[in-house]
Image 1 (cartoon, rainbow, N blue to C red):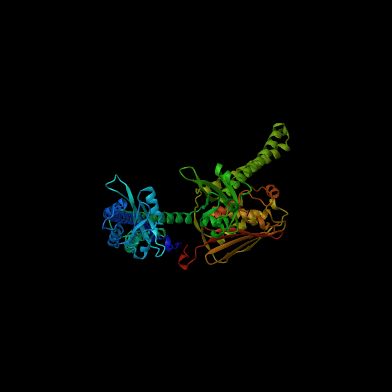
Image 2: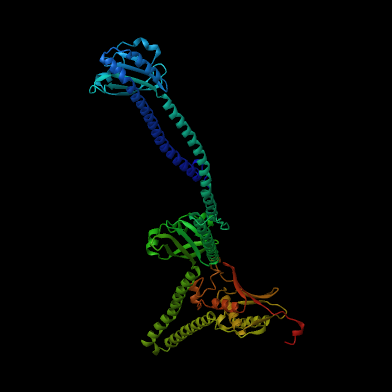
Length: 620
């Protein structure tokens, strides 16, 4: 935000003020010295002139005073001679002349109104001081009538013939006010000249200041534009002085900053693009753990918006503030597993931390990378469960076999009734392990992509009818005597051709039919049904067994998963049949799923894409 500069804060005003102030100080010093010197010189000149006049007057009056002091009677009256001389000397700035003899008796005066004091003792203190001290008394006095300043000079008179005999004194008063008036006029002229000089200096200083501040203001505007992100302006270089060089440097700086900003913007866009399209979540914080940046993936993983996350504490957002502290993260930087919800689905996130440090080692922030490890954790858990199930499934028949073999080794082989039965159990358990291992190998080949299909175009109605017929014969055997199972058919009347591997698909149908028979109650009905959609054929096998709980429907195709483990193991199941069926069906591009209600039975549905039958293909 631009701050308004007041008039008195402007550098232009400051420059003008400084220049004028310096001029005023200079004029003050020069004027004071000049006026003082003029005053001293004029007063000295005035006093010297009066002294010259006094000396001349003293020379003229000296014979009269000597005549008066000698007492000789002559035709010349000393008093008249003195008054005549005083009258002639009056004027030219001299306001009063007075002569006294050695006894302070007034011999003459230039003031025509004061002729009555002639022959009387003078009451002038300065005359008295000069007579008594026989020395000159110079003094400036104020006229009580006009208040004008006057220069008063009292000069003693000595005889030139009688070894310096004191004859009297001469008093001279002159108007010195004219000198001071002259000084005042000179001072006023100087003040007027100073005022004109100050005004001219104001104009000149303002012009100089503007010449200096104009480039500075342009630099100010340009630097503000640079700060606001506008690098298009160019400063005008007015000369090769320091300001011109500074303007050139600012132009170069503007270009450099523009290039740097473009580079930073490009890197920021690249970084934003990387952060936006990353499959991992990224959260950046300041040194106090407050979130300052969060990408879209992190928002989805943590289930919050950017506005809600910015400024929040990282540990609080990750919901681990009770488990770990920020100091622990800064010191150890260990990964954390976090339970979160992504789109309402529970997920497991691995949070990895790294520090943002300067070269000095100062930690300025933390980067937290969130990786969805839900699938990895699930696979790891399934792997552990798989190993546990395989170990358990193999251990059960092995334990049984070991028990029977130990019994045979202890002598049971000699018993004609027990030995065959023990050997039969051992053989059955061995066959069971062999089937389990074959199923595991089959699943392994499917997982590794090494289980190739031998595809043929097959009439699916005919194949399904063949499987159902085979199981109808099976339930009539002595193995199922007394069970009274029934198989019901609901097949398509027309042929429907599907490209399948016959052996693999028959294996799938056998697995489902075997499960239906195993879990159907005595006298139960197994129904085989076929329906056709636009692009798929759906095969359904339903039983009337105990059903599958709703919570287990999505798990029955997992490896080694059993709803009722005790009953399944008693019936000889390994828990791999449905897992193999699912993999085989998906290899054919189909789907398999189950529908069930507890206590009412289960229906397994198998959908496969089929080949539409055309009349020109009848020869097939």
